[in-house]
Length: 278
Image 1 (cartoon, helix red, strand yellow):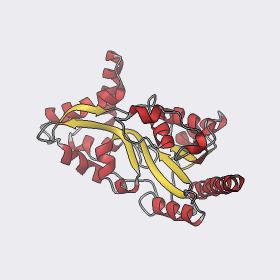
Image 2: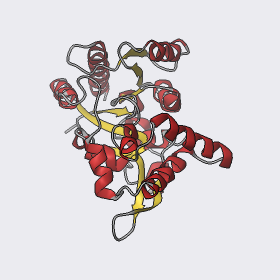
Image 3: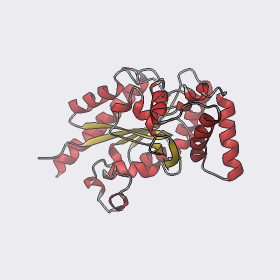
C-alpha cells in the first residue's frame, strides 16, 4: 500500500499565533517590570557582550525572578504558558479543522512549532497539545526543577535546521546522523513541496525563503488593523520572500484559512499525480 502523503505546517509562535512575546502575557507583569524596559535591557546586554539575544533573555528571566523574589520553577513557567492568549481562531479549531480538511483530500496534515520562545510555555498553553513536535528554546533544570542553564536556544539563524528535521523525519535533536543522511527528496517523510511555513517578521525570513525556494508555501501574518505590521509583511511579499501576506485571523473562512486550504488542495493534487506516475 502507498503511504498517505504528509503535509507539514510549521509556525513561529510569538507574533504569529499569539500577540506579542509570550513573556509579556504574565511573566513580565509578575516581576513588576515594563515590557519595553525588560527587552531594552536584554537587547542592550546582548549588544554589549556580542551575545545571542535568546540566551540573554533566558538568563534575564532567571535573574529578574531572583531579584524580585518571584518563584520561578518549571511549574511556574508552565503556569505562565497557560496565560498566553492567541489571535482569532487559533484556539478555536484551526488545527483540527486543517487535519480534517487534509484527510478529506487524502493527505495527513501535521502541525509544528519552530520558535525562539520557551518550549515549556508553549507546551503548557491552550494549544500545546496540537503539535506533532515543538522546536523551541528550553531550560535545563536542577533536582528542584529550578532553571540552571539553557538546554537549547532557537534563534533566527538556526531555525532552518528544524525544517530539515521535519523534512527528513529526524525529530530527535540528539540525533545528528539522521538529519545529515542523504535521502532523495521524494523518499523523505515530508518533501519541501508539502511544507507550509507561517511567520510574522524578519526573524522568520530564513525559514520563509528556504520553504519557498524549495517548492513549499511561505506566509507572513500581521495583527488585523496593524498598519505597521501590514507594511512589514507586504514588504516581505514584494521581496518575494513569501507567497502571501494576511491578517493573523485563523477563523474558518478568513483569508488565511482560505489560502492555506487552497495550498493543501494543490499539494494533495500534486501527490495524486505523482502516485499515478509511479
